[in-house]
Length: 398
Ligand SMILES: *[C@@H]1O[C@H](CO)[C@@H](O)[C@H](O)[C@H]1NC(C)=O
Ligand SMILES: *[C@@H]1O[C@H](CO)[C@@H](O)[C@H](O)[C@H]1NC(C)=O
Ligand SMILES: *[C@@H]1O[C@H](CO)[C@@H](O)[C@H](O)[C@H]1NC(C)=O
Ligand SMILES: *[C@@H]1O[C@H](CO)[C@@H](O)[C@H](O)[C@H]1NC(C)=O
Image (tube, rainbow, N blue to C red; front, side):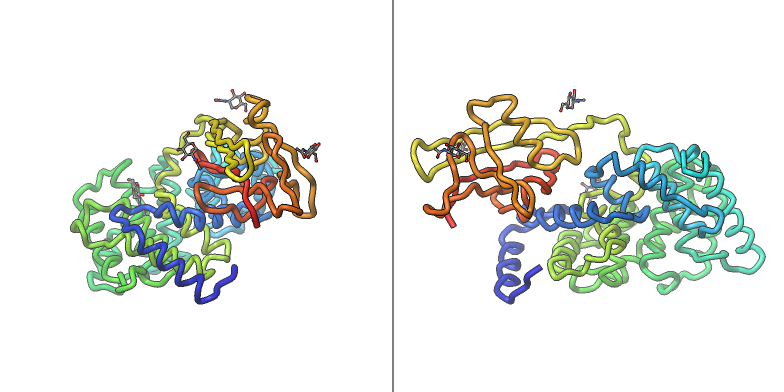
């Protein structure tokens, strides 16, 4: 991405223009989130955390799930945390992780995770530390809890004990503390017989996470911030209102994103859920039978050469469709108004004419596509609209 100082300034002005009391991405910066989603979708061999993030954002193409499943190999050699990520990724893809049709036969990833978590627990009671890390143990609990496996509570008992044993800050790094908070919140909400102890631990751990909040809004460092946001989002009852300046955190994350901090897919996948208001715990409640279509609002405007026009339509297209599909849907509903023509270019199809009005190199006119008021940075053959997005085709000059 180009990053002149001028652009940086424009960005700042945009951000300050609207103050964001709530904990959501301002609409003027929504394109950054859309760009991140597109970047993750282009990942040809997505990791489970990328798959989960895209599913939480509701933008993943279901045809990609098949490939993802086929790529699952060597479960025995995976660490517990890796298996946990696969369980969450599969569940978020609406594939039953207890019965996964891999190339090497059907696999029960939940019982694989239970075994690996039992090893972690045994290792802890034998040596005082888990076999891998507390981060992975916490991630295991999140996945087991989402799958309602009773093993989640046995493992959670360890985390409670550990947090109790180190009440000063510095008990865990921010990302581990955040995963512990997610794990214990899940157990607390879904299964707990350990009411009091969990509540106390969640007060403790959220205080620790909030203690790592920087002046800038970052929590820990930029890479732990996404997970910390998830943790703080689900634990609001355990810390004082106002202790987390969420809008400030979002603002700083977006600024760093603009500077290219999340081009690595793993980093991107850790931040995306928070920017779409989701957490790993939402994997449990993703609606697998929801509408497979998204709604796209489409407007064509010509104010350049008469007769002028301004027409709008709302169409439904399958989730994951490119913009061209929405244009085709509009055309098939109302061919008189929404007819269009494309020309193929080396960047993919380009719309050269809408409603009989042609772009022209002589007049330097063309059909510009915008999301709301923001010009699209991809062509109609690759841009994927999100649910309820407003796409505008505007006859413009260059
Ligand atoms: C926190 O959760 C609420 C829903 O409970 C959501 O609307 C909001 O966007 C979330 N914010 C973040 C930063 O996750
Ligand atoms: C989704 O859209 C297709 C056409 O694009 C339509 O046939 C189908 O009924 C729609 N499904 C739902 C649930 O609306
Ligand atoms: C196009 O029409 C809509 C209402 O149908 C209106 O809100 C919008 O301002 C119009 N746009 C222009 C550029 O005239
Ligand atoms: C616009 O372009 C199409 C195809 O390139 C052509 O068939 C049509 O005649 C053109 N219309 C005008 C008004 O120039």
